[in-house]
Image (cartoon, rainbow, N blue to C red):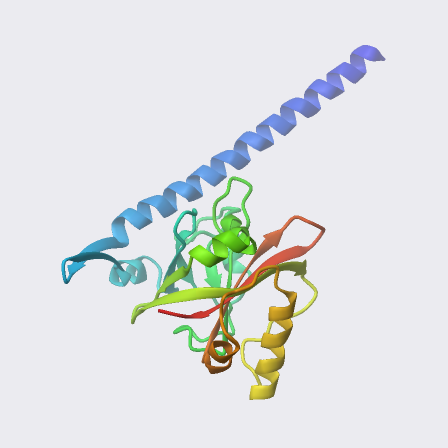
Length: 237
């Protein structure tokens, strides 16, 4: 009996090790794809004796017509193309180049306008255990980080600098609105997410009231089952 139990235990350990190795290998494949993509499309240009970064959307769109943007946050691993699929399922399981991979891609909600002009543009990404994709989004739930960092979002037309004003974790039990039926509906939503926030966003009530668009970023959270970290931002130069 003891030998049989030992054999079962060894078998389980071996199987778990194989699965862990395969998972890590898939993570590395996705990381390599996105790093190589970044090298191809991130360009540095000079303007008034200053260097600034631009994104080669012509190349991105050739490789994937679903491209709608590029997102980057300094001091994090967030540095990825943004796509919009025909649904909100495909890019949970496929990378930017359409390869099956648990890392998936960063993607814009299917109901949002591809030029990010919706009332609330919602962008999703996995929280990978190796720290890739949207894992570092959780840093915005710390006051010191939120105060000193912005989200850079490039579109084919322009670059947006986004200031986070609300960040929190909650159960994924509600649907976030993409469009508001009225100004009252929008102000009610802003009030709710501001009160729910774990940080003080450093954005005035007037700025929130005058903001034409809200940008919402969503990833998994592991505090409890089926939790999400949700970060809200508005444009600020």
